[in-house]
Length: 247
Ligand SMILES: NC(=O)c1ccc[n+]([C@@H]2O[C@H](COP(=O)([O-])OP(=O)(O)OC[C@H]3O[C@@H](n4cnc5c(N)ncnc54)[C@H](OP(=O)(O)O)[C@@H]3O)[C@@H](O)[C@H]2O)c1
Image (cartoon, rainbow, N blue to C red; front, side, top):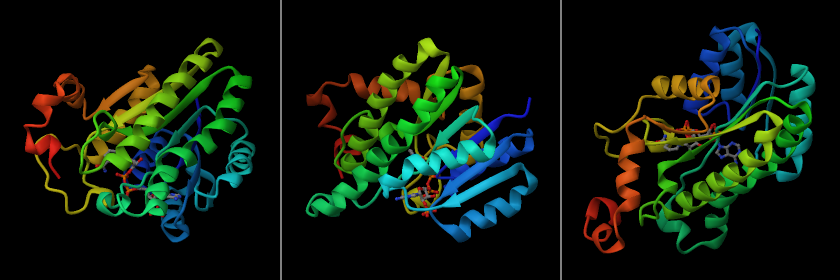
């Protein structure tokens, strides 16, 4: 079956790897990304699998509805949608500059909600399909090093949970892809360790989650256990560990 797949934030390193997997298995793809030159390079590399693409800034919320309608029209329907864009930002700056903090929240949460509204309405009417968005383990516990970003991702996780229950009776699957750290442009300069993922493996995990109807997925998978422990740590213990509660 040739799936009709929409990828929003397609120029992200992880989303581009997802697009490669989807193209290789024969999906029809519609790609949306901010950076027109990067998007064009990706479209060229994927060849005839891409039936349409569009560039734009997702913080222009008012354009989200028309943008999603165009994608659905060009694809001739929709089977799978992945929303992948995100912005880690500079935590310290977000603590003294409200407009900057709002840009982090708007990119990671508000802009995704603006896209989810038209997509959810489409899937609800259609009565089948998969809708996935990428959140982060950073949203599981507020930490000084990234709590503005983490708060926005946690809000998105809550939103996805509610949306999942709304659409479940309609046969629509909503996926929360909780990523641990992965070397991409977003994480450049961050010290790596054995818990880090690799973008192609993570991309395979995202595709697999949709195929197998796994609704909440940690990638790499080891993060499910790590976060189960971290979530359970009492505050007084959490505060003693510099690698968790420090900058
Ligand atoms: N890498 C990690 O360690 C990690 C960990 C947990 C979660 N995540 C999440 O994984 C997802 C993919 O990130 P990545 O690691 O692949 O990083 P990435 O390569 O830096 O991709 C981030 C993408 O978000 C796009 N973007 C940012 N602000 C935007 C806006 N206002 N409008 C449109 N697009 C915007 C960027 O567009 P441009 O190409 O124009 O810059 C870029 O394509 C994100 O949701 C991220 O939060 C990543």
